[in-house]
Amino acid sequence: MKILDCTLRDGGYINNWDFGEDGIRLILNNLISAGIDYIECGFLKESGQSPGKTIFRSIEELEKFELPAWNYTLMINYGEYNISNFSECKNKNIKIRTAFKKNYQREALEYISKLQNLGYDVFVNPMHTNIYSQEELLCLIDEVNKIKPCGLTIVDTLGNMYEKDVVSIFNIINSNLDSDIPLGFHSHNSMQLSFSNTKAFLKAGMEREIFIDSCVYGMGRGAGNLCTELITKYLNDNYSKDYKIAPLLKIIDELKTIYAKTPWGYSTPYYIAAIHACHPNYAGYLARLGFSDEEIDKIITKIPKDRRISYDSEFIKNLVSDINS
Image (tube, rainbow, N blue to C red; front, side):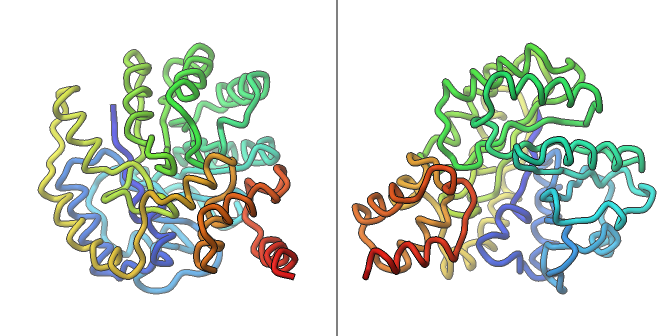
């Protein structure tokens, strides 16, 4: 059982990834001191990087932090980073996680294969894993078995999975995925279920190498993520792990200054978005406009189901304008 901390990547949705160079070093050093197995350092994107941000235009920009030997990852949203930007892998400590939507599965897996041919260790992260039918999931697993990545992640993108969903998806994947491919779980806390869903995943995965995504202080868009400080203590007490908690508290002290300006965590607007399988940014936008929870619920139900998964800022602005008129 391993922890993959995403604070510098998923947490960056809160502060536009602007942790500052000193903040990045503080978080990295203390995650290492805590013994966190994998550290996700941010996104690889072709634009948007500036000093102190955890969006990188190249692996070399991350390496400027003179990282000690450890397991690091960078996330790519398929379509946001051209394969031509990569050269042969020179640093096996830095692994790539590639996230993709279901309709781009074939292209994303081809992209991942090209990365592997360049020598990179790559994780496969299918967004909205719970919207795959069983047939689609089996097809995905079959393709994943062919390319043999260093991990496959179950992604609860909208935070609307229950324990039974986690266990059901796990059982399908576990029964068909090659036994030497680790399986992970990435959750969001929109319905206050990140921790309980993760415990269910841990219990189901006793016979396979598994990894858990988390963020210190739960930092993340909307309702946030599973808290690193919670899951590490739970693994220490129940699975004989030896993560250090004190370094995580140092990170929390750093993050509290961000939280004071831009709080995250459970709220009813994000709960409403989750129960309607809707992107949390819709709820956040409506809440900022001052709509009540009841009004947010009514407006979200007016969004066509096929438009709820991906956030469209112009669409929701027009919808609100039509309602107000």
